[in-house]
Image (tube, rainbow, N blue to C red; front, side, top):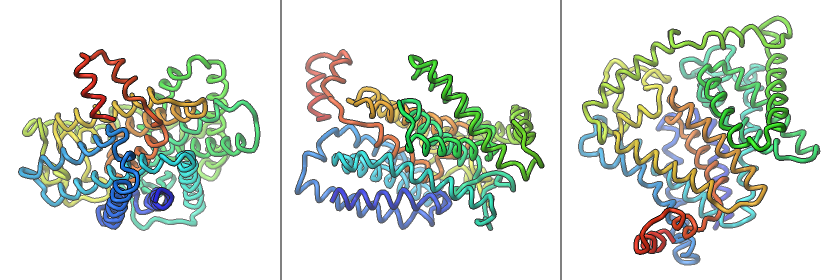
Length: 427
């Protein structure tokens, strides 16, 4: 059952990004039923064959709190249909995560997760190259996917930039720990150059900003290797810029160390630009809306109903352009709190989980990649894409290893009776 589930999850992970990144409900509907059926099959199998798997580390069942927050809004949701669609989405993401955690109990499968992650990254690079060479042409795409910008299969340059940034940092963490140069190292160098070049080619100012923030986090996590960090990071960044410059010959007319188009884009980072002003307007409207239902929000997909001027707009113009404000108006402050605490808990478990030297490398890469995805959600509607959530949960599955609940709980100074009760519940 584990191998069958792993193959199914891998197919979902590798195929669905090319369906608009599962932005539209019509694209994700089939996969919702498929994943739900797969989940029921696994529950039945483990219940009969290996019930200890279902009981082990029950803390991961807390993932159901996220869709449950949307269930709470059913009685007063502004957009009942949109709210149910969102509920189904988040239950699907939750099933996907639990299936990943149960399936990785097979050690061989667990080790394959990072390879599947890289395969998707390579497919993104191949897709971007084919799009650059006009082998792939979009008839429809999100606002902002203009000629000259890499949009990827999600058809939106900003979200694709965040994804490429996540891949860059994950690969960076692996490369910086390698001690010898072999064909694997050479291949990883090609990947990191490609990820960096595509990231630059998105011309996403928000992604540039959060790339810098994630890089500061990398320095914090790897400060003991600061010499190697400085040497490798500067080399990788210049390598990425070099590939980008070579790919921009047609656009700029000649090879430049830093192309004029990139200089102009970076110099244009300012809160006074038209796009920044539009986002600020969105944010002000979202905060004003949340004041009418601050605790539990208005339910899923309520933004275009509350503000009818956005109702008939498509291709991203009906979005808040801030994933966290989107949660605020949909599930309120309590939902935001649940969201934050759950993912903080998962990151804490990554940091505290038992690991080998190899796992420590993946752990740093996972945290850096997640910081890019969660960070960029501040300035865009990345969380509206199913692909982003599949990437997030796949990264958590890579980073989370066996945990000793007793060790973790005892480090939190609770009363003896409370400690025993918590351990008994989580085991």
